[in-house]
Image (cartoon, rainbow, N blue to C red; front, side):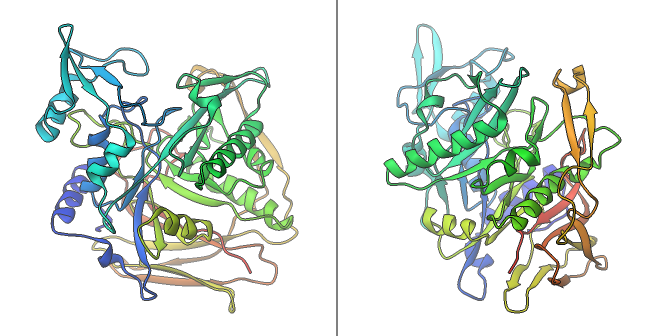
Amino acid sequence: MKQSMTRKNFIGAALATAACGRGVAALQTPNGKRWYRGMLHMHTHWSDGRALPEQAVAAYKDAGYDFIALSDHNRFQDNPDKWMAVGTGKEKGWPPKVVHPDCFKAYVERFGRKMVRERDGKTEVRLATYPELKKMFEEPEKFLLLPGVEITTDAKATGQTYAMHMNVIGIDDIIERAKKANLIEGCPKHTVSSIIRETREMSEALAKKRGQECICMVNHPNWLLYDVGAQDIIDNPELRYFEVCSNGSEWPVPKELDGEWYHDHIWDAVLAYRRTHGQQMLYGFGCDDTHFYPGSGLENPYVFGDGYIMVRAEALTQKALFDAIRRGDFYASSELDLEDVSFDAKTRTLKVSVPATPDVKYRIRFLSTKKGTPLDPVSYVEIPATKAHMNRARKVPIYDEGVGATVNLVTGKRGERLEASYTLAANDLYVRARVESDAPTQFKRRHKLHPDHHTAWTQPYCC
């Protein structure tokens, strides 16, 4: 897929590409595995999304995605009698109580009135369930719909409220604690760290009980209503995944911080600690966390398609995808597709390549932390509880400049393919790569917690 494009061009090109038969075969790798494009964080009218479920799923399938998971707040799409009234004007409050008339009009034009009824003088539309959506959209080796939910909780143990969001993918149910709650559940005795631990433990227990498996990830580490810091993840060594790229991460960044790559700072602080203490790697996801969709009849202030993952797997099944994700055979992206990523354990070498794109220039940055680098924060930036920060005070840690330092930077020529590699030194704890483009993203960011140019992140590697 072409890397440099506006939002309008992106959607148009994606639809055209899908219509021309772009399939997973085009992404096949020499070892018989394939690159599958996936999205594991988005919302529909089951919670606070501004699209009916069919519209949301269709948008990703039309755009050439291979798999997705709907992740509505504290709701799984299993109620066969969930109806929403169609509104007559602008929506009010949160979450939206009615379907916007433009959204409903676009829905009927594409999907008809099978799920529509007239009751007490009002038009209502029934929300499609997960089983219905699977039956409607899934195709073997072409499109897969995974079960998911965003567990949304308020932590209040510190005397200040912080909302904690975690996605649980793979279970066709949700934990009882969230099932009985509203879209936001209050946990007065919890901290962010304890919510991460409890949500993961409860979800994994539920998956085991149902004979299923799940992936738990921390969502948008920096958001107006809460912070997840490196220490919260360090306190949870069993946690394997977080969002290094998410449209949901957004707050005014003070001048003392290099905010554009602050998620990378969190990642490297955790990786350095875990490698020093013999713990498992932390892997990064890309997600768009969208609430608005092309084809839904509404304007799109949230960006569709600006964050996703590419997974190299043997087949388009939940098991094959999860197996690949668990071994780190995937990368996170914000509109930048790599040609290949490989790590040779014998030579301790990470190699990354990017295909040529007209008028686009790439650079490949290799990041690592050396053994002996101080791991504790060297200072903190105090952010007051102002209106710009939603009245949430913050204390942001600053780490030693050797944590996540650039150990090699290779810059290519405009319009040309770029390949680069890095061999682990004896004192490197790990290596990962960030591929940076000079092609701008679809949406101009107000805050620098999301890259404003196309970017991709490999997973970390070590021996």
